[in-house]
Amino acid sequence: MSNSNIALITGASGGIGMELAKVHAAKGNDVVIVARSEHKLLALKQELESTYNVKVWVLAEDLSHADSAQRIYEKTKSLGIEVGILINNAGFGGHGLFHQRALEQDQAMMQVNMVTLTNLTHYFLQDMIKANYGRILNVSSTASFMPGPLQAVYYATKAYVTSFTQAIAEEVSDYNITTTALCPGTVATGFVAAGDLDGLSAWDKAKSPKSVAEIGYRDMEKGKLVSFNETGLKFMLNWIIPLLPRKTVLKMSRQFMEK
Image 1 (cartoon, one colour):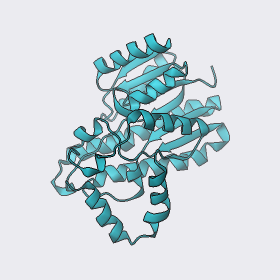
Image 2 (cartoon, one colour):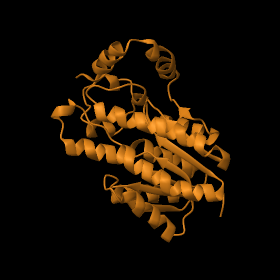
Image 3 (cartoon, one colour):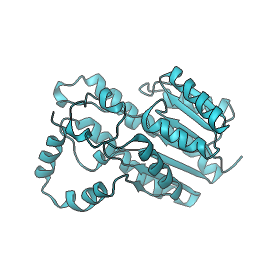
Image 4 (spheres, helix red, strand yellow):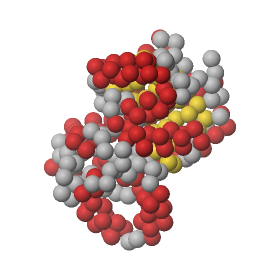
């Protein structure tokens, strides 16, 4: 089967990932949902199948494990699932001075945010090229456009995602495949508590994960390179930040993250 509309979505147990699964299923499309929490995935499966009359597969995987991407890919192959849409949404952050943070936490962050994302893209891209069709949405962040003191590794991982996504887009443009980097600003999800970001004023005006998912999915369908959910942020990042002295940008970025 070519031009498959089956989507595989990581980090689907909550936040933007869950909302992306709902947007996809609402269009009558089947979906593979991936996250660590199997009971949350099973609850979402029941909701999507009963509401939208679609098929949902559950894959409980910890993406911080080095071989998780290979296991996910092999599982879809064994089930006969042809993934035409890959949505790499899973990711997490962490607050604090780099030298004071546990190295293991940042290593796990790099694994989930960059390495597993890259591995999944590599595996599923092979099949998309053979099918001459595919859509990839990598959830990045506006954080990818500048360094982030007090979130040094997180910002760096997202810079990787935005850069990687655009480079791949050019490489696969002849195969009817598009890759899109979704770069939201602050979003009201479990990311805040998980990343020890409670109390930051940056999250006072956080957008809903539903609104971000709808914009990201729409821009993926259009084949946009980079998707922003806030036009004001897009203007600032593209036209203001690049013109400022680098040390000024760093001070601004740090103040944004200070509690």
